[in-house]
Amino acid sequence: MTITEFLKPDSWFDQGAGPRYVQLRRRLEEAIHSGVLPPNSSLPPEREIADITDLSRVTVRKAMHELVQQGAIEQRQGSGSFVRESTARVEQSLSHLTSFTEDMQQRGLETTSKWLERGVFLPTEEEISVLSLGDDESVARIYRLREAGGQPMALERAALPLSILPNPLEVTTSLYATLDQIGHRPVRAIQKISAINLESTEAELLNVAEGTAGLRIQRLSFLEDGRVAELTRSLYRGDAYDFVAELQLSG
Amino acid sequence: MTITEFLKPDSWFDQGAGPRYVQLRRRLEEAIHSGVLPPNSSLPPEREIADITDLSRVTVRKAMHELVQQGAIEQRQGSGSFVRESTARVEQSLSHLTSFTEDMQQRGLETTSKWLERGVFLPTEEEISVLSLGDDESVARIYRLREAGGQPMALERAALPLSILPNPLEVTTSLYATLDQIGHRPVRAIQKISAINLESTEAELLNVAEGTAGLRIQRLSFLEDGRVAELTRSLYRGDAYDFVAELQLSG
DNA sequence: TAGTGGTCTAGACCACGGA
DNA sequence: CCGTGGTCTAGACCACTAG
Image 1 (cartoon, rainbow over the protein chains, first blue to last red):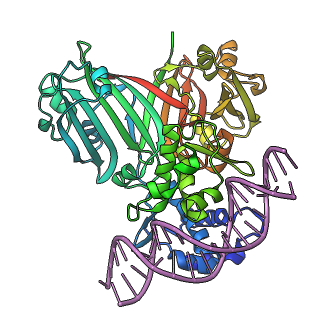
Image 2 (spheres, rainbow over the protein chains, first blue to last red; image 1 turned 30 degrees about the horizontal axis):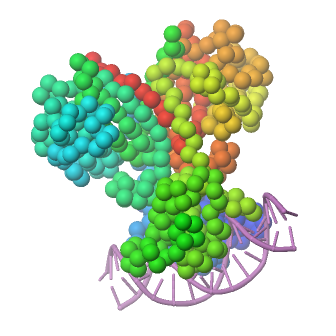
Image 3 (tube, each protein chain N blue to C red; image 1 turned 180 degrees about the vertical axis):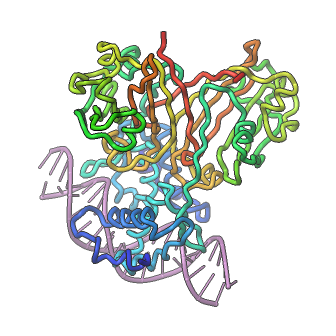
């Protein structure tokens, strides 16, 4: 069964069964799940789908846009539309304070970082108050794209007082390993997790479609002596990450 | 400054500064953040915006669709487009096992439930294995839309062995309160959190746009004696919920 | 250079909501 | 009833990719 045959509208298109783009999207989902369109295979060009199904290209695009947003397919300008391989999900604990690099190493995944910003900067109002910075105290900032197993996984933007991390350029792979070396490894953190639709810039860096759901995480971590060590805001790919927490009945 | 003046394209539209729908979306975001369009105010009709900006309605719709997806505005067929009130975010702990109802009560929010399914059913394969059901053992299922302070907050689908909850119809508000009464309150749980784009059915129930980011949570909870008490899959509104976890350095 | 997805238009009809 | 958003079309041009 070729996809061209599979899309011939006589067999599935039902006048009056809801919007046509919804029906087409469902049909394409079926094709993917049934194996008519295996992972990494290419879909017919939009114009051809429009032709086969007797729909306009705008309508076809609307159906495909939803699949892109779901993460089911990927569109590359000038090249075509392709079924995405479902990426293996990675789990991260929400009770143990671990380092991304160390965490991934334990799973046997290579990690790399693309540096987007790294250095010493004038702090924002928020950083001054959250990190308890003194007057004229600068802040170390590290902004990077973290990848594991060749896949972009998260955007991480960390801010630390210079008293904790005097030289941000020392950080090459693991921030926590660097902090450990200079005796400033955090022992406790508060983390806030929410879901957002990724905006275009971020989505592009993470190699997902604009509007894809991601996890936004704000972490505030503390040294043993109670000093704030780090304020980090991260965006994780929703399709690649699960956070796992263990809960106890509160006394 | 009226919104009509604010949208006159002479002042902001820049030929060659990216797609027009992006420029229009940005301009509308500005209008909302600057107060030209206060919360709950109505936007001009799509056709009128198209007229003012000298764009086609399709392009205007594309810009507005993104705002809908961001949760910035809301469109009501036959009525119009409106600026959404930013809903206060609710925080839920990821270290203490609490009940939704009790949690909200503590914040002074009234909770209500819309029952979508409640009763005794034949278990799925997954339920049999996860809940350790015996042959011919049925399962109690509770599926409901949870609201707090008049706002839909989450969709919750719980499955419990009948040995834990013999009569699901007893559950009127708080599942955990009911379990407490019959001596089956869970003391521990494992929770898995991920981000997804909400599909149309779910989005509609939660009163957000299709494709909006939501938090998917799977919770497996246990009684004191180690028996599995409950398998719950929930979808939380991403714009209304933050999950908060406290992390410790793992030994 | 040919073929792909990305953007954009003008115009049509439908479905729903409120006066 | 009218005005709103929702769906849909045919056709155009641009931007990018690959052979």
